[in-house]
Length: 611
Image 1 (cartoon, rainbow, N blue to C red):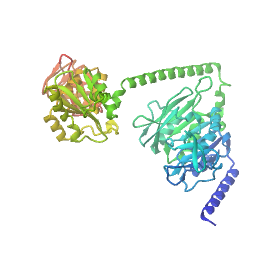
Image 2: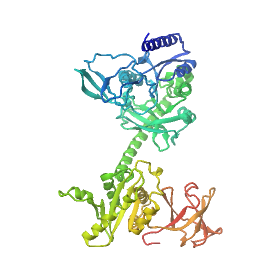
Image 3: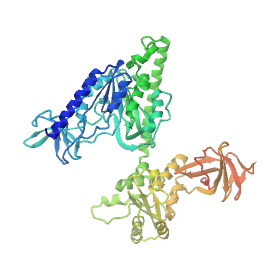
């Protein structure tokens, strides 16, 4: 017997054995009806051992094809027993093991329109086709009180078309935008954005409470890892509630709460969880301890005496309170939407700030120009833009010019994936001599602004040693100012927060060498030598100048500017009005020990008069 036929025969026999076991199984609880899709066999065994009426199935397995730029018809052989009448559906979106060849055969002849998939990754995943087929049935289950639990994966990126093969060529009718989330219409990309990301550092949101779902997650979180993050868009028909977050604050798990025809929110109906290797133990726990609390109507055997709490048995006064609860939720949702709109407006207003630490090329130049104008430079010229608008070809020039004061500043801007090289920090120098000759003036200085490591998170970049010792010395010798867009981002964000006079940042552009990240109105006066945590008191060793009671002081720690006013201070445990150079002064602080570490520099924040 040929090897392939032998394998197929063994698979059919294995399927028959599973079907026989399924028929023999008699659950302890007839309700709810539970369907496990693409989950381990052990998960089915464990759930059945707990007495639940459970069946398992698959959307189909990916299979290998010859790598090419062409298309092949999609072949699928799913197996979902009695899927139309299930009440709880638990799905693992992690694809089953990739097969060497497809299961099943083409379901239509080549001359008939069908699903075709591009072979550019050497694998075809057939699951979206059957997911679309069951979508209307799963939507109906959801609408009638059913519950879905999903172990998430990022959206499948697969080129699928609807077409037919004619005379050896594929005739494409349209592109199909279905993926591994197409089993419920509410999960379409216009509602839920699923973006690929990876990590293991997961935490509960601040608003987590004693709800059984959060208690379950608190125990299970250590076993989870994610490769997808989520963001909800249109929430007219549902509410998205994040339940787990990454270290960067992105949603890695959440609950979707649909609305009824009158706009009222129903109970949690879709629970999206990150991946865990512990699914076979996790699912029985969910079914025994968590889901009965969320959807008690699906678990008549555990509802006990709580059926009297249903609306049809409830007291009128309690129904009134429930109604008030619904109205309160609506008010909160409305306020949240209004705040979301304001957040979007603010982000749009200051979008240039984020773009200067992610962008490159012409867009980066435009956004830096916006930053310079935002801090009060009035005569900022975009030289590149002017050159583009000239019919005559002109050699490359500096990107921007600042002509507000003397010296005039020529600015060269670069977005780099790595750290800057000397040729990149010094490039602006060649434009200086050119302009001196052209303008017949010598008061011209260069500025190099670098968006370094632009593909890395801002706080994870090498921000202290961006420029080498030689680069800094060269900049000093050649009267060039060098800085990063990260420096500019921090300074402008500090200016907005503490309402600095923009002049305190503008002045820094006229300092040669490595531009400091400390604004010009911050004058160093000493450093922190001790922190008494219980009292919330710090000790400052005054090494320069003096400070007065009522003086505003500042700190620049971990890329954040902090400020506070001295309400009271002591020297040798005696209250004083002034502390002078050489003294150690203790002051009450509003900040924590973590925010104000030992040896941190303390600055006197000067006002416009210099005091």
